[in-house]
Amino acid sequence: MVLDQQSCYQAVKSHDARFDGRFFTGVTSTGIYCRPVCSARVPKREHCRFFGSAAAAEGAGFRPCLRCRPELAPGNASVDASQRLAQAAASLIEDGIASGNGLAHIAAQLNVTDRHLRRVFEAQFGVAPVAFAQTQRLLLAKRLLTDTAMSATDVAFASGFQSLRRFNALFRERYRLSPSDLRKRAPRVALRDDFAFELAYRPPLDWARLLAFLAARSVTLVENVHKQAYRRTLAIADAGAVHTGWIEVLQHKTNALLQVRVAATLAKVLPQVLARVKRVFDLSCQPQQIAAALGPWAKPNAGLRLPGAFDGFELAVRAVLGQQITVRAATTLAGRFAAAFGDSVQTPYAELQRVFPPAPAIAERSIDDIAKLGIIATRAKTIRALAQAVADQRLTLDPSADVEATLMALKQIPGIGEWTAQYIAMRALAWPDAFPHIDYGVMKAMNETNAKRVLARAEAWRPWRGYAVMHLWHSLKE
Image (cartoon, rainbow, N blue to C red; front, top):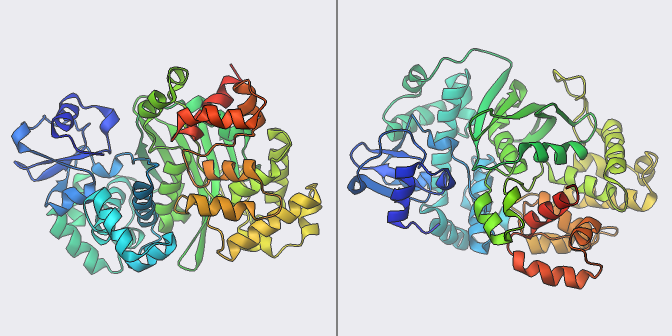
């Protein structure tokens, strides 16, 4: 965002949650930087400096506030091409993919040159990618030291540091206290077989409808909704190993937070787990801005979010299975698919017994293996071709992917048309302007029968047409 100094200070004075995560305030009299919602006494205007990212604040010599904890601030969604590229790089860093790799590796992942990526990244975040990565590792370590009972060594390596010595030295240099000093100041956390975290969002968030959407599409044995909690299994590959476990997500009863429990078996991939939770529950959303852009018809339901995906391949398979059949029928097929091909996993929940099979495992299956589950042969062929493309890394199904190139690649797979490609872009790529205009529900809600007219009318909703789809689907249930 463009940092209007006066507007930023007014947001700080009013503790305006709409600006949480959109900028940080460095206080020159204390050397500390805070979120706009910090409960500490509001500093004088002349003592404030404003930064677009935590990394920029730390680069200017400020250290994070121990009260408002900048590492807990929500992120920011964007549709601008340059901003989206910078945020895709930031997402790779936050996911831990870039740990131990340089800028060239990140640029290659995003199909751009190092120089171009550095330029757009610095324009967006105010610091170079390397400095941003360093700040993110430190902030994650700070969170783990505060919120878990993990040993300092485990915290260091889970945060992407290559040595405990380097971790200790950099932590002390940047934050002016050692990891052990921070832990002494934090509330004591008991040893347990899972981790507990809190993730912030900008209200409103319609938790009930978000859960209902996910529940209707949940894959049996892999995920479910129980009362007000979302639970699922996860399998995350990292550094040549696959880590499996489970998570549970609930909404905090009073604060704008999600409470997340993560199995201890996922300790080495915590950055990826938390990043995926943020993505699935659309915690970077700026609901007031989107509702205003969509118009008065969307404002009464400003809390609707655009659900993401924990795994792009899983979501894509689910989309193919859902072609021209009911949501319930597709869910049944997805459950059979997971039961037949997914590996078993231990969880405290009887309903969760499998992880969704990865693309390489499905690429090795025959079309007959897939079809015998009750999946028609043409869709079985599509799923196998999709798996092969992902396994061969010809297709990337996560928010770091180039949207237009991915849409084109998806539609080159026999059996994947415009609806399926747009739905995958909407959820797996987290593309807020995706618009499956030939969707029956969309056309019905718009009282249209002509796809061209649907597209023409939807022009007014750019660049948030994906959110418009959620509002249109919701309107059919009222």
